[in-house]
Image 1: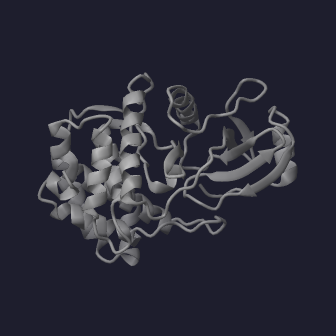
Image 2 (image 1 turned 45 degrees about the vertical axis):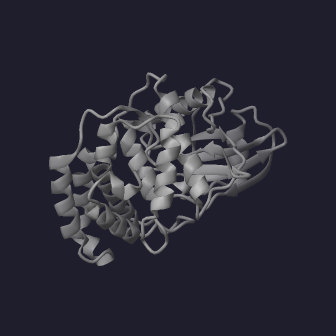
Length: 319
């Protein structure tokens, strides 16, 4: 979450006339994340998140994301749900942006998750996959393999100015993944951005999963690969195999990975690392001076990608 578009209190009051959420008492920007503008909104009735959708989110895809959160919440997944306006709509216009009000979830995200947190995260991710199979919605992964070459083409001219040698690294990796990307793996609704800052904890229990705006239909094990990249690397760039074992064990406790999924993990992890390397590099090169938050350094995903390139098999991840 972040703030790129500023909303005055007067603009908020006018916007809220379309909703039955009460009179605002607290309204402030949330300086976290990279994709949308988010505000903490507290009224005399309840607490909410007001989100303005920035350019990365396509307006015509908002019904998928918002409906998905409603469906998942109804199935027992702790996630935010959209508040319907008086006319029944889940979106409205604010400052020339599509906007939505979402329910607020208690909890904090963790900067340094423990092994126990990784175990819980793995089981929560598997639960999302299992419950998501009951949902008929479908959305192609807009940031899947087919999109990476296009993103690379936009940033490679300046990429080496940010990360030395990244152009050669990315070109070689794209060639490798294009020839070796696995197919026919078990698939369904995935989160696709299952990082610690999108998982909330209260008293060492998961209280919420947020930021479903990259959710799509793709391989479940790719989602696990994203999580391994996000939860199991330390600040010095090393892979923590104990955390990896915990995350995979937690996942297996709810949905047992098929052998084909286990064997595909090294390549899927390479792809997940490349995806975030590319999008972080893109954000770094296209930083908005008006944003309350600075983009994340892509360098850490260079180190993670190189680890995955050296992995001899799924055993490298704790299997």
